[in-house]
Length: 177
Image (cartoon, rainbow, N blue to C red; front, side, top):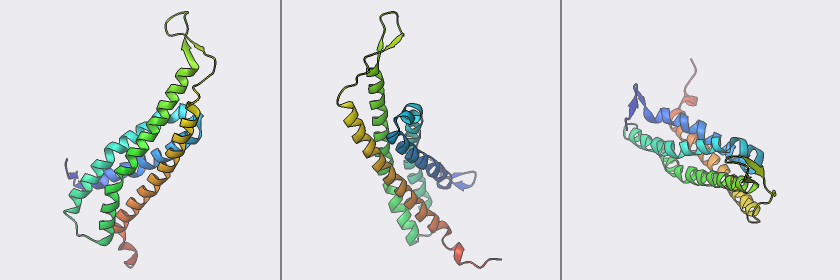
């Protein structure tokens, strides 16, 4: 993986992907967990954000480790590295839970529709019944999704805050011109 792109550290570029898509996945996960109509409409998009997060977070971590070898160390940077190394342990469970919500949605939809004998691909509404286990399992997965999403959002903030302080923390002590 290249360390620099057009003279800029790759880490500085990838961080922007993380600080946009992780919060989008977090907020989207909460919305689709508590609002089933939003799950039907936006669930696959939120799952896509989470998939990209699970790919980009390790790349961002690796590029940060490469950058670390080139910059002076400080306590905020050490904290940023420690927290950044743990970010994957938040985004992957969030991805799994969002995928579980969407899998449950697919099961629910399949139970509510049947293939009509009138021809291939025509659908008619079934009895409107879903398996008795579906609702309690969906509630448990939704609650877990909200909890992990909140934790992921908090952790993402902590990683970014420590990183920003390690790079820009000295600026407030500088006199203005």
